[in-house]
Amino acid sequence: MNRPDFFCEDYRELGDALGDMAKEAKLLALWVGYRDRLLVVTLELAAIDGRLLLG
Picture 1 (tube, rainbow, N blue to C red):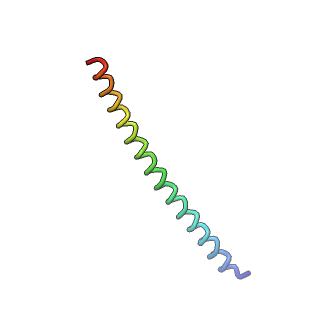
Picture 2 (tube, rainbow, N blue to C red):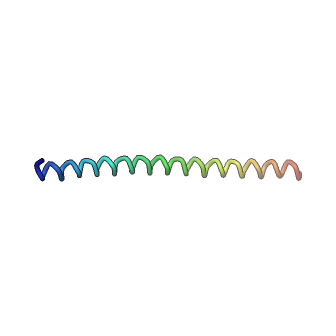
Picture 3 (cartoon, rainbow, N blue to C red):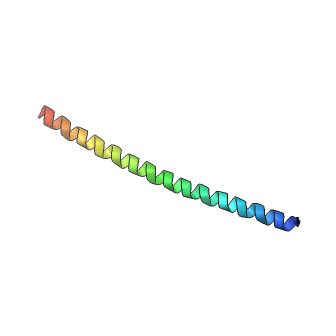
């Protein structure tokens, strides 16, 4: 095993791992955004429903 090849392979693996982490972070951010939007819609519907019941 050549020492420079060993380090090069480690950096490739690190780059792959960082790329995977970035993809997961993006998916998590999208999921959190959708979750927050669903919460807002749910609260709006609850407010409308409450107004109809009280109204």
